[in-house]
Length: 281
Image 1 (cartoon, rainbow, N blue to C red):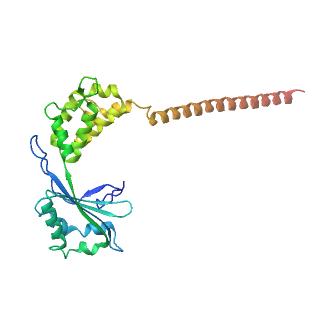
Image 2: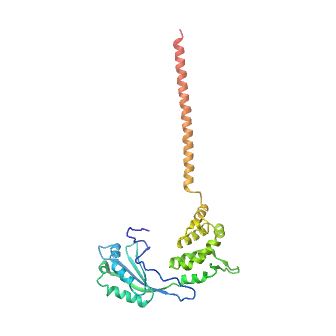
Image 3: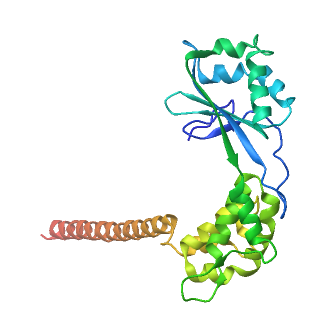
């Protein structure tokens, strides 16, 4: 994944093109609020880049923020340079009205010259936030999802509860995810210590999704716990190698000293021997 200075993210990731907040999380008993997505795929006009297309959208972004039912906009730049432009509304009526305004009221926007119109594919689709709504209801009150295997007694499902926290937070329902996250902080530590690396990873993901610190998960450092389940860190191995090299180097130095001493001793012996020979008549 490449993040550019202008904030555009490539290779299947996306950039929020507006700062509009999502609707408040759905409470138990409230109807599911559908999202209508206006999805457009296109290529920039010849000679222009996806960045040029994004820059040409400044007035369109301002226009959308003032449209009834507008929720958010994201622009995705695919690896092949294709642009995926997604605009979310709260109803099909508002979506059609907003789309008509871009080609009508905003017909003079520079964005229209930044598009290769022969490559445009445009459609509406409905996305109901039923998944997050179901998870919010399923964890409401008790704070966790239940595992009910055939023939087994129903019990808390720690892993799926952690996954539910991630899903709700990613969808924009972090408020509804607070209760199951708090339950995990209070009860999941024995489970994660018994279950190993994958369990640690699930809880770390949940902490990040909630904007929490995985190093202080109910008083437990999940990152350190995950590290302790694996092999010794590479740094320690390097230190061991360095010590071995030092020992070998030190041993070599000792032998050089010994060898030098022997050579010097032999030389001195020859010197004394020569002097004695010279003194003989």
